[in-house]
Image (tube, rainbow, N blue to C red):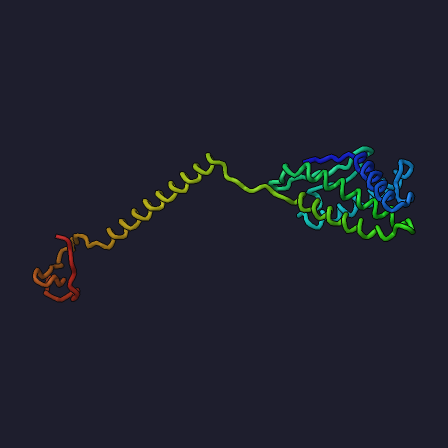
Length: 216
């Protein structure tokens, strides 16, 4: 997934927000103009480094994403992230713009003696947007089994159950058959007392004293 955010939108937000703050504070120094945009570019680069470090803490591997800027865009690329939620693309863009806007302003006002008190609030606001950005990038779609695949899995499971049942029944029948007595054909010279079923040799010596049950 590749998400591109327009850097010009970040610059516009910075100039608009600082202009409002300058008017409310009656402090023209706070307002960022086009002449100050190169400095904003440096602050944005710092912000991207912070964002990259934060994302690497929450993603499984650093090779799964890259975050960088070009002449015109901020680019976030994610690779091989299982079930990445593509529906969050718009929110990721918005969070990236707001994060960089507030981060750059916090750095900007920290160098203005009469506006240093604004640095911490803007920095905290940037941190909130960064946390939101991290959560969005790490968000996953729910895993769903397609209906046709679900039915196929059910059929496979049922078939396996039937096969196993047949196998168990066949094994039980074999074992039961092995336990059944079978008709014995004794060698010449071995006789059986009809009344007691005691095996004797031809001289009437008892060979087996335990009564045996045989099939007729």
